[in-house]
Length: 251
Image (cartoon, rainbow, N blue to C red; front, side, top):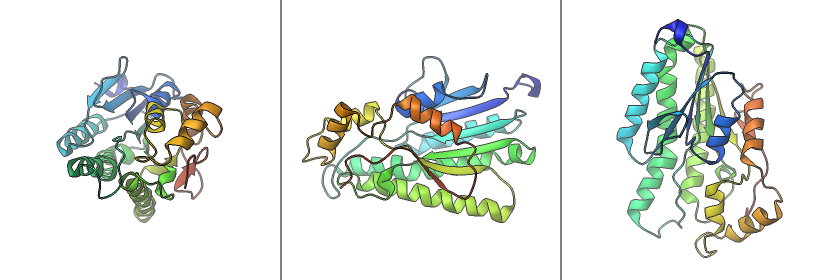
C-alpha cells in the first residue's frame, strides 16, 4: 500500500466484536477510518487480527502487525485502544491454578506488553508527525476491592500505573504518543450480564449488578459511553485516568 492509498486514520481495537469494543468501533468519529479488530473472534465487517490474550506467542504476532502497518504509515493519526479482557471470576487461592495463570497472562501481562509493542512500533510515525494515541481500558476495580476480582483488579491497577509512568517517560523524551487509561463505569455488556448471573458465593457483587441491570440505575449503554470516550480523546490536561459513570456493586 502506497502512502497515497493509506487511510487518514487507523484504529486498532482489541475485543471489537462485542460490548464496549464493538461500540467504540461503531462510534469512531473519524470519517473513513480503517478499524482493525484484535480478537480471538473475527469481526463480520472489520479487518481482524487473531490474538489470544492468554497466549504470549500471539502477542508477538500483533507486535509484528503494528510494526508492519506503522513503519510507512502516512496518514494523520494512529490509535490503539486495548479493551479486550479474559473473563474469569474466582477467589484467590481457590479454583484451578491454570485458570489463574491464564487470567494473569491476559489481564495483567498482555495489556502492558501490547501497549509497549504499540509504542515501539509507532516510533517512525511519531517521528514523521503522525498523531499517535494509546488508550488502556481500565476499571473501578483498579481502586476498589471486589471479592473474586483479585487478579483483574491488580491488572487494572498495574495498567494505570504503567500509563502514568509511560506518560512521564514521554515527557522525559520530549515527544511521543498521547497515552491515557479509561475507567468506563458500569456498562451493559455481555460480560456484565454474565457476571450478574453468577452465584453470590462465587461473585458477591452479582446481586447488585443484576438489580442495576433491571433498574438501570448507574448503568451506561455501550454506545453512549463509547461516544463519551471518543469525545474526550485526545486527552487534555494532566489526568492519566479518565472516569465515566460510577461503580456498581462496590463493597
